[in-house]
Length: 366
Image 1 (tube, rainbow, N blue to C red):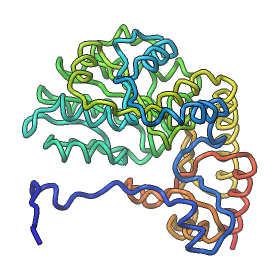
Image 2 (cartoon, rainbow, N blue to C red):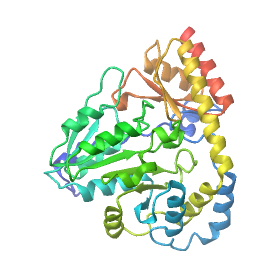
Image 3 (cartoon, rainbow, N blue to C red):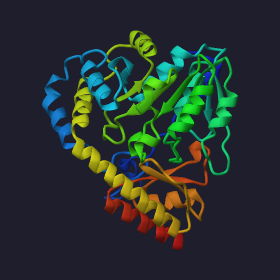
């Protein structure tokens, strides 16, 4: 058998570890009902308008989509309040992240600044593109170390990446803080703000710099349809970028990365304001409920601007996680984030939230 070689640094590559599926837990423990609160998915599922759009266009799946999704670009630009030439749609925001690393960084020379306990995709992309990955430590409260990130950036820094609201803590940087950070970065350095959860931040004008996008020369904002819009299974995301950078990335990308049904679904999702607002209402109520109840149960809880809450239980996190699995509740232990004492739980329906708290209370008091 041939032994196909790859670059030495890729041979020990640590893969992304996804959350467990409902089917896996049903089979493992012989359960009929499993509640999944591990992957930050939309608690209401998929919009009825989206379902109709998919069904309506299913017979067209043999056709190629229109390259670069111009109808969706127009709709996103109107929703975000920016010009169309700033929008680049991708196969999830992960595609835009990957392109940024490959196009902005110079292999073996450039560096990227991020902070610890963050999304594994950034480190993976840095390793694949041979960019130095500068990981800034956080304090005990896990606050976003924006000042230290600015200090770590130099003339070879391609990007400084801030996830806001942050996964897995739920903490968010304010517009004022991000404006200061953008203003002190080196001339050719991008400030990349991953806003996968920005729809859940309140009040929104306090947290998203996109509202003042014209005032930034070096800002890239990344957004997704996976969370608030309920399209995680269709993989649609986008970047809001300086127009010149957006044009360069558009010219260099592979064709047809957003499939036809995904584009139609995303267009329908933007139209369904009722579903979107119901999602926000449910999530904001649910995270308040989680914060109060988890605190009552003796857990340390981080304040969240996202659709999930991170907490540290009074018993070992792995013990709690495994006990919940046996009871048919999937949450996310955070050892892969370097936070082995903590658990992340996303907001579900009211009934799912109540069931989770009841079963967790039984475990903690058992």
